[in-house]
Amino acid sequence: MSFKTGFIAFTLGLILVSEAAVVMAQKVVTGGSTLPHGLYNDILPIGPDFSYTGKNSVTGKTAVLTNNGSLFSVLPSQDFSHRSVVIAASDVVITPIEELTYSLAHNPSVGYPPIPAVANWGPVLQMPSVGTSVTIPFNKNTTAGTAQALNFRGTLSNSLPDFGDLCGVFSGRISDWSQIAGSNRVGPITVLYREEGSGTSALLGNFLNAACAAEASPSNLKGGMWTVDQPNFAQQFNDDTVPYRGARFISVKGSSGMRDAVFADQGRIGYVGPDVIPTSDLADATKFALLRGFSPTAANTQLAIAAAPVPNDANANTRSAWLPNFGVPFNGYAIAGFTSWVVSQCFTGTDTNDTVATMTTFLNDLYDGDFDATITADNFVPLSIEWKNAVKSTFLSNTSGRGMNIANSTVCNGIGKPLQ
Image 1 (spheres, rainbow, N blue to C red):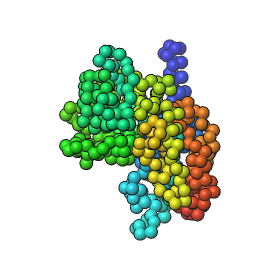
Image 2: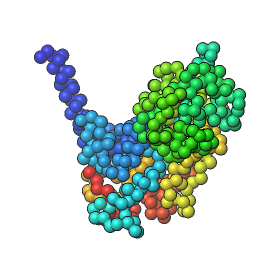
Image 3: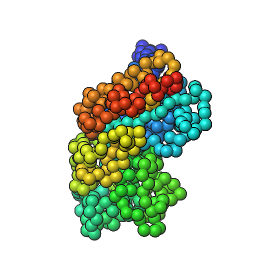
Image 4: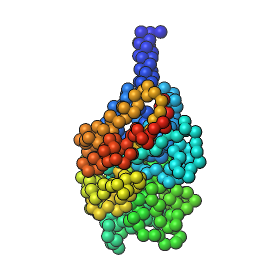
Protein backbone atom coordinates (compact mmCIF):
# COMPACT_ATOMS: atom_id res chain seq x y z
CA MET A 1 0.00 0.00 0.00
CA SER A 2 1.42 3.39 -0.95
CA PHE A 3 1.86 6.11 1.65
CA LYS A 4 -0.83 8.20 -0.05
CA THR A 5 -3.33 5.33 -0.12
CA GLY A 6 -2.55 4.40 3.46
CA PHE A 7 -2.92 7.97 4.64
CA ILE A 8 -6.30 8.31 2.93
CA ALA A 9 -7.52 5.06 4.47
CA PHE A 10 -6.31 6.14 7.90
CA THR A 11 -8.01 9.53 7.53
CA LEU A 12 -11.29 7.97 6.44
CA GLY A 13 -11.12 5.68 9.43
CA LEU A 14 -10.72 8.62 11.76
CA ILE A 15 -13.69 10.36 10.13
CA LEU A 16 -15.90 7.30 10.57
CA VAL A 17 -14.84 6.87 14.18
CA SER A 18 -15.45 10.56 14.87
CA GLU A 19 -18.85 10.44 13.17
CA ALA A 20 -19.90 7.45 15.23
CA ALA A 21 -18.68 9.15 18.40
CA VAL A 22 -20.69 12.25 17.62
CA VAL A 23 -23.85 10.18 17.07
CA MET A 24 -23.37 8.36 20.36
CA ALA A 25 -22.76 11.64 22.19
CA GLN A 26 -25.73 13.56 20.86
CA LYS A 27 -28.02 14.58 23.68
CA VAL A 28 -31.14 15.36 21.64
CA VAL A 29 -32.23 13.47 18.52
CA THR A 30 -34.68 15.52 16.50
CA GLY A 31 -35.81 16.47 13.00
CA GLY A 32 -38.97 16.75 10.93
CA SER A 33 -39.97 19.75 8.84
CA THR A 34 -37.69 20.75 5.99
CA LEU A 35 -39.18 24.26 5.82
CA PRO A 36 -36.96 25.56 8.71
CA HIS A 37 -34.20 22.97 8.24
CA GLY A 38 -31.55 25.52 7.32
CA LEU A 39 -32.53 27.77 10.22
CA TYR A 40 -32.33 24.94 12.73
CA ASN A 41 -28.93 23.93 11.41
CA ASP A 42 -27.89 27.50 12.18
CA ILE A 43 -29.34 27.86 15.69
CA LEU A 44 -29.28 24.34 17.11
CA PRO A 45 -25.93 23.27 18.57
CA ILE A 46 -25.58 20.50 15.97
CA GLY A 47 -23.00 17.88 16.91
CA PRO A 48 -22.62 16.69 20.49
CA ASP A 49 -25.87 18.31 21.65
CA PHE A 50 -28.35 17.96 18.75
CA SER A 51 -28.92 16.09 15.54
CA TYR A 52 -31.52 17.43 13.10
CA THR A 53 -32.75 15.27 10.23
CA GLY A 54 -34.97 17.07 7.75
CA LYS A 55 -37.76 14.72 6.64
CA ASN A 56 -41.18 16.39 6.67
CA SER A 57 -43.73 17.75 9.13
CA VAL A 58 -45.74 14.53 9.40
CA THR A 59 -42.63 12.54 10.26
CA GLY A 60 -41.74 15.13 12.89
CA LYS A 61 -45.07 14.74 14.66
CA THR A 62 -45.01 10.96 14.33
CA ALA A 63 -41.53 10.63 15.80
CA VAL A 64 -42.61 12.34 19.03
CA LEU A 65 -46.02 10.68 19.23
CA THR A 66 -44.49 7.20 18.80
CA ASN A 67 -41.08 7.87 20.37
CA ASN A 68 -39.46 6.47 17.25
CA GLY A 69 -35.91 7.69 16.79
CA SER A 70 -35.39 5.47 13.75
CA LEU A 71 -37.49 7.92 11.72
CA PHE A 72 -34.49 10.26 11.91
CA SER A 73 -31.88 7.65 11.00
CA VAL A 74 -30.23 8.37 7.66
CA LEU A 75 -26.99 6.41 7.40
CA PRO A 76 -25.90 3.18 9.10
CA SER A 77 -23.59 5.37 11.16
CA GLN A 78 -26.62 7.43 12.24
CA ASP A 79 -28.82 4.77 13.78
CA PHE A 80 -31.17 6.49 16.23
CA SER A 81 -33.55 3.54 16.67
CA HIS A 82 -32.47 3.19 20.29
CA ARG A 83 -33.01 6.86 21.12
CA SER A 84 -36.02 8.70 22.52
CA VAL A 85 -37.55 11.60 20.58
CA VAL A 86 -38.69 14.34 22.97
CA ILE A 87 -38.90 17.20 20.46
CA ALA A 88 -39.41 17.54 16.71
CA ALA A 89 -40.38 20.18 14.17
CA SER A 90 -43.68 20.37 12.31
CA ASP A 91 -45.59 23.05 10.43
CA VAL A 92 -48.82 21.09 10.88
CA VAL A 93 -51.02 20.98 13.97
CA ILE A 94 -51.57 17.60 15.64
CA THR A 95 -54.89 16.35 14.29
CA PRO A 96 -57.83 15.08 16.39
CA ILE A 97 -57.23 11.56 15.06
CA GLU A 98 -53.55 11.71 16.00
CA GLU A 99 -54.57 13.07 19.40
CA LEU A 100 -57.05 10.24 19.96
CA THR A 101 -54.63 7.54 18.83
CA TYR A 102 -51.93 8.86 21.14
CA SER A 103 -54.31 9.27 24.07
CA LEU A 104 -55.61 5.71 23.80
CA ALA A 105 -52.06 4.37 23.86
CA HIS A 106 -50.14 6.80 26.05
CA ASN A 107 -52.23 9.52 27.74
CA PRO A 108 -55.64 8.29 28.92
CA SER A 109 -58.13 10.69 30.46
CA VAL A 110 -61.61 10.36 31.92
CA GLY A 111 -63.63 7.85 29.93
CA TYR A 112 -60.59 6.23 28.31
CA PRO A 113 -59.75 2.59 28.97
CA PRO A 114 -56.94 2.17 31.52
CA ILE A 115 -53.40 1.43 30.36
CA PRO A 116 -50.33 0.21 32.26
CA ALA A 117 -48.57 3.02 34.11
CA VAL A 118 -45.37 2.37 32.17
CA ALA A 119 -47.22 3.20 28.92
CA ASN A 120 -48.56 6.53 30.23
CA TRP A 121 -46.26 9.06 28.60
CA GLY A 122 -48.26 12.15 29.52
CA PRO A 123 -49.39 15.01 27.25
CA VAL A 124 -47.71 16.16 24.05
CA LEU A 125 -47.29 19.93 23.69
CA GLN A 126 -47.11 22.02 20.52
CA MET A 127 -45.72 25.54 20.53
CA PRO A 128 -44.99 28.03 17.73
CA SER A 129 -41.35 28.50 16.82
CA VAL A 130 -41.13 31.22 14.15
CA GLY A 131 -43.34 32.89 11.56
CA THR A 132 -42.97 31.89 7.93
CA SER A 133 -44.21 32.64 4.46
CA VAL A 134 -44.90 30.14 1.70
CA THR A 135 -43.47 31.56 -1.49
CA ILE A 136 -44.79 30.93 -5.01
CA PRO A 137 -41.75 30.38 -7.25
CA PHE A 138 -42.41 30.31 -10.98
CA ASN A 139 -40.36 30.03 -14.14
CA LYS A 140 -42.07 31.49 -17.19
CA ASN A 141 -41.03 34.30 -19.51
CA THR A 142 -43.52 36.52 -21.30
CA THR A 143 -44.56 36.11 -24.91
CA ALA A 144 -41.76 38.55 -25.74
CA GLY A 145 -39.27 36.17 -24.13
CA THR A 146 -38.48 38.43 -21.18
CA ALA A 147 -38.78 37.99 -17.43
CA GLN A 148 -41.65 39.99 -15.98
CA ALA A 149 -43.11 40.45 -12.51
CA LEU A 150 -46.23 38.43 -11.69
CA ASN A 151 -48.73 39.77 -9.17
CA PHE A 152 -51.82 37.83 -8.11
CA ARG A 153 -54.29 40.41 -6.83
CA GLY A 154 -56.68 39.88 -3.96
CA THR A 155 -59.55 41.47 -5.89
CA LEU A 156 -60.96 39.32 -8.68
CA SER A 157 -60.33 40.72 -12.14
CA ASN A 158 -61.18 39.78 -15.71
CA SER A 159 -58.07 41.44 -17.06
CA LEU A 160 -55.31 40.88 -14.48
CA PRO A 161 -53.95 37.90 -12.50
CA ASP A 162 -55.80 37.36 -9.22
CA PHE A 163 -56.25 34.87 -6.37
CA GLY A 164 -58.86 33.05 -8.44
CA ASP A 165 -56.22 32.34 -11.05
CA LEU A 166 -53.82 31.06 -8.41
CA CYS A 167 -56.55 28.78 -7.07
CA GLY A 168 -57.19 27.49 -10.57
CA VAL A 169 -53.53 26.79 -11.23
CA PHE A 170 -53.09 24.63 -8.14
CA SER A 171 -56.42 22.83 -8.60
CA GLY A 172 -55.65 22.04 -12.24
CA ARG A 173 -58.61 24.05 -13.52
CA ILE A 174 -56.16 26.38 -15.27
CA SER A 175 -53.63 24.46 -17.35
CA ASP A 176 -52.15 27.10 -19.67
CA TRP A 177 -50.56 30.46 -18.89
CA SER A 178 -52.78 32.06 -21.51
CA GLN A 179 -55.77 31.35 -19.24
CA ILE A 180 -54.38 33.84 -16.71
CA ALA A 181 -55.62 37.14 -18.08
CA GLY A 182 -52.97 39.84 -18.09
CA SER A 183 -50.07 37.49 -17.35
CA ASN A 184 -48.61 38.09 -20.84
CA ARG A 185 -47.62 34.45 -20.97
CA VAL A 186 -48.66 31.44 -23.03
CA GLY A 187 -47.87 27.75 -22.89
CA PRO A 188 -48.66 24.77 -20.67
CA ILE A 189 -48.40 25.10 -16.90
CA THR A 190 -46.53 22.49 -14.89
CA VAL A 191 -47.47 22.45 -11.20
CA LEU A 192 -44.87 21.06 -8.80
CA TYR A 193 -46.09 19.68 -5.48
CA ARG A 194 -44.56 18.01 -2.45
CA GLU A 195 -44.69 14.24 -2.67
CA GLU A 196 -44.43 13.66 1.08
CA GLY A 197 -46.58 14.96 3.92
CA SER A 198 -45.51 18.58 4.15
CA GLY A 199 -46.40 21.48 6.40
CA THR A 200 -45.73 23.77 3.47
CA SER A 201 -48.51 21.99 1.57
CA ALA A 202 -50.83 22.46 4.55
CA LEU A 203 -50.10 26.19 4.82
CA LEU A 204 -50.71 26.61 1.09
CA GLY A 205 -53.97 24.67 1.38
CA ASN A 206 -55.13 26.84 4.29
CA PHE A 207 -54.64 29.94 2.16
CA LEU A 208 -56.35 28.41 -0.87
CA ASN A 209 -59.30 27.30 1.27
CA ALA A 210 -59.84 30.87 2.43
CA ALA A 211 -59.04 32.58 -0.87
CA CYS A 212 -60.94 30.34 -3.26
CA ALA A 213 -64.68 30.03 -3.70
CA ALA A 214 -66.02 26.53 -4.20
CA GLU A 215 -65.35 25.36 -7.73
CA ALA A 216 -68.25 24.52 -9.99
CA SER A 217 -68.88 20.84 -10.57
CA PRO A 218 -67.10 18.88 -11.82
CA SER A 219 -64.02 19.79 -9.78
CA ASN A 220 -60.71 18.03 -9.28
CA LEU A 221 -60.89 18.88 -5.56
CA LYS A 222 -62.70 16.80 -2.98
CA GLY A 223 -66.03 18.52 -2.43
CA GLY A 224 -64.93 21.25 -4.80
CA MET A 225 -62.90 23.02 -2.09
CA TRP A 226 -59.46 22.98 -0.52
CA THR A 227 -59.15 21.15 2.81
CA VAL A 228 -57.47 22.93 5.74
CA ASP A 229 -54.46 21.48 7.56
CA GLN A 230 -53.94 18.84 4.86
CA PRO A 231 -50.22 18.04 4.60
CA ASN A 232 -50.57 15.64 1.67
CA PHE A 233 -51.12 17.72 -1.45
CA ALA A 234 -52.41 14.83 -3.57
CA GLN A 235 -55.08 14.07 -0.96
CA GLN A 236 -56.73 17.40 -1.73
CA PHE A 237 -58.01 15.77 -4.92
CA ASN A 238 -60.60 13.17 -5.80
CA ASP A 239 -59.28 9.63 -5.30
CA ASP A 240 -56.22 11.14 -3.57
CA THR A 241 -54.68 11.64 -7.00
CA VAL A 242 -53.51 14.82 -8.70
CA PRO A 243 -55.30 15.65 -11.97
CA TYR A 244 -54.02 13.81 -15.04
CA ARG A 245 -56.07 15.62 -17.67
CA GLY A 246 -55.18 19.14 -18.78
CA ALA A 247 -52.77 20.44 -16.16
CA ARG A 248 -49.49 18.67 -15.60
CA PHE A 249 -48.46 17.86 -12.02
CA ILE A 250 -45.00 16.65 -10.97
CA SER A 251 -44.07 15.58 -7.44
CA VAL A 252 -40.83 16.63 -5.75
CA LYS A 253 -39.24 15.92 -2.38
CA GLY A 254 -38.19 18.49 0.18
CA SER A 255 -37.87 22.25 0.13
CA SER A 256 -34.61 22.31 -1.81
CA GLY A 257 -36.03 19.81 -4.27
CA MET A 258 -38.98 22.11 -4.92
CA ARG A 259 -36.80 25.18 -5.40
CA ASP A 260 -34.43 23.45 -7.80
CA ALA A 261 -37.16 21.76 -9.83
CA VAL A 262 -39.17 24.94 -10.45
CA PHE A 263 -36.23 26.73 -12.00
CA ALA A 264 -35.10 23.70 -14.00
CA ASP A 265 -37.60 24.25 -16.82
CA GLN A 266 -39.90 26.89 -18.31
CA GLY A 267 -43.60 26.87 -17.49
CA ARG A 268 -43.25 25.60 -13.94
CA ILE A 269 -44.80 26.91 -10.73
CA GLY A 270 -44.70 25.58 -7.17
CA TYR A 271 -44.57 26.55 -3.51
CA VAL A 272 -41.73 26.56 -0.98
CA GLY A 273 -40.70 28.09 2.33
CA PRO A 274 -38.34 31.09 2.41
CA ASP A 275 -35.40 29.39 4.11
CA VAL A 276 -33.91 27.91 0.92
CA ILE A 277 -34.25 31.16 -1.04
CA PRO A 278 -31.58 33.90 -1.13
CA THR A 279 -32.98 36.95 0.64
CA SER A 280 -32.46 39.15 -2.41
CA ASP A 281 -34.50 36.76 -4.57
CA LEU A 282 -37.58 36.98 -2.35
CA ALA A 283 -38.21 40.50 -3.60
CA ASP A 284 -37.67 39.49 -7.23
CA ALA A 285 -41.21 39.27 -8.60
CA THR A 286 -39.93 37.76 -11.85
CA LYS A 287 -39.10 34.61 -9.84
CA PHE A 288 -41.41 34.72 -6.81
CA ALA A 289 -44.95 35.91 -7.34
CA LEU A 290 -46.36 38.91 -5.53
CA LEU A 291 -49.62 38.38 -3.65
CA ARG A 292 -51.69 41.57 -3.34
CA GLY A 293 -48.54 43.44 -4.31
CA PHE A 294 -46.51 42.01 -1.40
CA SER A 295 -43.37 39.92 -1.88
CA PRO A 296 -42.67 37.05 0.57
CA THR A 297 -40.02 38.91 2.56
CA ALA A 298 -39.67 38.66 6.33
CA ALA A 299 -41.00 42.20 6.72
CA ASN A 300 -44.15 41.45 4.72
CA THR A 301 -44.63 38.16 6.56
CA GLN A 302 -44.42 40.08 9.84
CA LEU A 303 -47.31 42.25 8.65
CA ALA A 304 -49.35 39.11 7.97
CA ILE A 305 -48.87 37.41 11.33
CA ALA A 306 -48.98 40.54 13.50
CA ALA A 307 -52.73 40.34 14.01
CA ALA A 308 -52.68 36.82 15.48
CA PRO A 309 -54.06 37.08 19.05
CA VAL A 310 -51.95 35.69 21.87
CA PRO A 311 -53.63 32.69 23.54
CA ASN A 312 -55.45 33.39 26.79
CA ASP A 313 -56.77 31.31 29.69
CA ALA A 314 -59.96 30.56 27.77
CA ASN A 315 -58.27 28.92 24.78
CA ALA A 316 -54.69 28.14 25.81
CA ASN A 317 -55.47 24.44 26.09
CA THR A 318 -56.40 24.24 22.39
CA ARG A 319 -53.80 23.60 19.73
CA SER A 320 -55.45 25.99 17.30
CA ALA A 321 -54.77 28.90 19.66
CA TRP A 322 -51.03 28.28 19.45
CA LEU A 323 -50.99 27.34 15.75
CA PRO A 324 -53.75 29.43 14.18
CA ASN A 325 -54.91 29.00 10.61
CA PHE A 326 -54.11 32.41 9.09
CA GLY A 327 -56.28 31.83 6.01
CA VAL A 328 -55.87 35.09 4.07
CA PRO A 329 -54.26 37.58 6.48
CA PHE A 330 -55.68 41.08 6.57
CA ASN A 331 -52.33 42.68 5.72
CA GLY A 332 -48.96 41.78 4.24
CA TYR A 333 -47.96 38.71 2.26
CA ALA A 334 -50.96 36.44 1.96
CA ILE A 335 -49.58 32.93 2.65
CA ALA A 336 -48.22 32.87 6.18
CA GLY A 337 -48.21 30.80 9.34
CA PHE A 338 -46.18 29.43 12.22
CA THR A 339 -43.85 26.50 12.18
CA SER A 340 -43.81 24.69 15.52
CA TRP A 341 -42.08 22.42 17.98
CA VAL A 342 -43.85 19.24 19.08
CA VAL A 343 -42.61 18.41 22.59
CA SER A 344 -43.27 15.71 25.16
CA GLN A 345 -44.26 17.15 28.52
CA CYS A 346 -43.32 14.30 30.86
CA PHE A 347 -40.35 11.95 31.19
CA THR A 348 -39.31 8.94 33.24
CA GLY A 349 -36.06 7.13 33.82
CA THR A 350 -32.51 8.34 34.26
CA ASP A 351 -31.64 11.04 31.75
CA THR A 352 -28.16 9.76 31.00
CA ASN A 353 -27.90 11.86 27.84
CA ASP A 354 -28.98 15.09 29.57
CA THR A 355 -31.72 15.28 26.93
CA VAL A 356 -34.37 17.28 28.78
CA ALA A 357 -32.02 19.93 30.16
CA THR A 358 -30.37 20.39 26.76
CA MET A 359 -33.76 20.77 25.07
CA THR A 360 -35.14 23.25 27.59
CA THR A 361 -31.97 25.33 27.50
CA PHE A 362 -32.35 25.68 23.74
CA LEU A 363 -36.05 26.55 24.00
CA ASN A 364 -35.39 29.18 26.65
CA ASP A 365 -32.69 30.73 24.46
CA LEU A 366 -35.06 30.70 21.47
CA TYR A 367 -37.89 32.47 23.27
CA ASP A 368 -35.52 34.85 25.06
CA GLY A 369 -34.67 36.19 21.61
CA ASP A 370 -31.08 34.96 21.43
CA PHE A 371 -31.53 33.80 17.83
CA ASP A 372 -33.71 36.63 16.48
CA ALA A 373 -31.02 38.02 14.19
CA THR A 374 -30.36 34.60 12.68
CA ILE A 375 -34.08 33.93 12.29
CA THR A 376 -34.50 37.16 10.34
CA ALA A 377 -31.39 36.50 8.25
CA ASP A 378 -32.89 33.13 7.27
CA ASN A 379 -36.04 34.92 6.02
CA PHE A 380 -38.27 33.91 8.93
CA VAL A 381 -40.00 36.12 11.51
CA PRO A 382 -39.24 35.93 15.25
CA LEU A 383 -42.28 35.73 17.47
CA SER A 384 -43.35 39.03 19.01
CA ILE A 385 -42.47 39.78 22.63
CA GLU A 386 -46.07 39.04 23.62
CA TRP A 387 -46.03 35.65 21.92
CA LYS A 388 -42.61 34.77 23.34
CA ASN A 389 -43.77 35.62 26.86
CA ALA A 390 -46.92 33.55 26.39
CA VAL A 391 -44.89 30.53 25.24
CA LYS A 392 -42.40 30.85 28.09
CA SER A 393 -45.02 31.34 30.80
CA THR A 394 -47.10 28.42 29.53
CA PHE A 395 -44.65 25.79 28.29
CA LEU A 396 -41.39 26.56 30.09
CA SER A 397 -41.96 28.22 33.48
CA ASN A 398 -45.67 27.74 34.34
CA THR A 399 -45.93 31.30 35.63
CA SER A 400 -49.25 31.24 33.76
CA GLY A 401 -50.47 28.56 36.17
CA ARG A 402 -51.84 26.49 33.29
CA GLY A 403 -49.90 23.34 34.15
CA MET A 404 -48.71 22.91 30.57
CA ASN A 405 -45.00 23.40 31.16
CA ILE A 406 -42.36 20.79 30.40
CA ALA A 407 -41.84 18.41 33.34
CA ASN A 408 -44.66 19.89 35.43
CA SER A 409 -44.39 18.04 38.73
CA THR A 410 -48.15 17.70 39.23
CA VAL A 411 -49.08 16.58 35.72
CA CYS A 412 -46.04 14.33 35.37
CA ASN A 413 -46.20 12.72 38.81
CA GLY A 414 -45.02 9.15 38.19
CA ILE A 415 -45.64 9.18 34.42
CA GLY A 416 -43.71 10.14 31.31
CA LYS A 417 -41.96 9.10 28.15
CA PRO A 418 -39.02 6.76 28.85
CA LEU A 419 -35.69 8.40 28.11
CA GLN A 420 -33.03 6.52 26.18
